[in-house]
Length: 108
Length: 108
Image 1: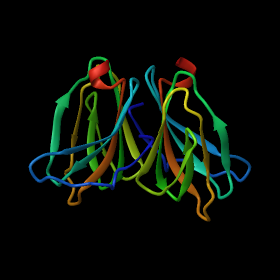
Image 2: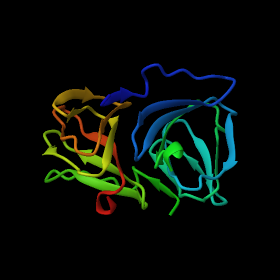
Image 3: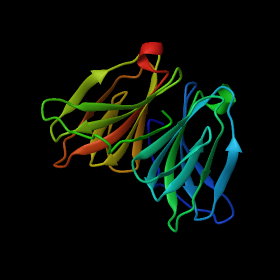
Image 4: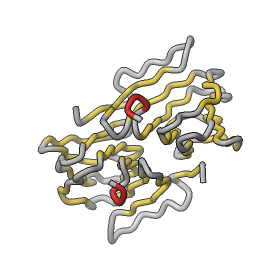
């Protein structure tokens, strides 16, 4: 399918971060991430995939390689293959963000 | 650099579509596209790169493989390698969007 919308079927979950897959090809995965306040993803590394995080709504705290930033709408972070990164919603509002992995983790 | 912001240094140009490169790695290029009303990009194809377009502000008219859609904020389109696609701002407002190419065109 050539078209999608992050707001179609968007549903937060108080139990866990929601990942909405929008597109996947041999070269990239393009998805939404929905974080309730307090939700986080522990530090991890992808051996072969580069990852970009881009904030659409809310404020996400993102660390890459030990450097931490609060990212509001329009801000983005790059974790290259092998770089440890983590993610948290420490704000009061829900976070809507994009995550791009290239190549997709299953195809790296 | 691990962090960037599409609104830092964002500047429209009435003469042409502006591309703001945010990140480039071996696997992906992540950039902003800024379109004044009336600006467009003619149909073209990338032989080896998949491209995702994601609208942040405004309404973009995007065609992929002959199918055309008006994309508002949160909507996105995928043009896989080899699929002809074009892009226009037929609205009254400026368009701010993201474009992801994987692999980057110069490295495909």
